[in-house]
Length: 216
Ligand code: DX5
Ligand code: ZN
Image (tube, rainbow, N blue to C red; front, side, top):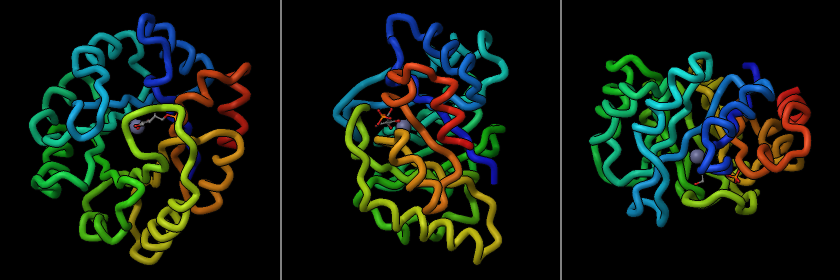
């Protein structure tokens, strides 16, 4: 599978989001990672469907990879797909109808993803693997950018990669948190094909070179 970088807008300039998305597109990104937080599932708040809807017509070519860090994601699927999300990923940890919500995302015309926190074992999502387009492995505790990569999550990536091959499945394996020039190769060696980078991408002196280096 081709390797993709999804720059995370969380690390962009929130007073000039349009400029930050432009920087991602100009660097050669085809995906943009959008972090949605509710102040309950994670102790932080970001932005909502209105922000996606405003960016959507300005960047019609970008794939909006939308990561919902919400206690009740099933309540917000339709607004985010209508706002222009191409993929909506939802966490396994809260208690709601995961399978039904994943199906609903597809029924509305978007791709879906299931997300695991660092402490969540891969077995927690095993029963859903046939239903998903993407599995997102958090390599930091979600809520904030700029945290250190958790190496203890690498075996989880390898397990999901092994299951994908053994079962003939086609989901992408994405990593999110602390991905930089040093940790991206570790993620790729473990089997990740989709890399989220916020701080390392936006702080890079040459963003196009950063993108090329982590995806080459
Ligand atoms: C954290 C978010 C990440 C965040 C990653 O809760 O899910 O997408 O933007 O930021 P960095 O790359 O700075 O660790
Ligand atoms: Zn994220």
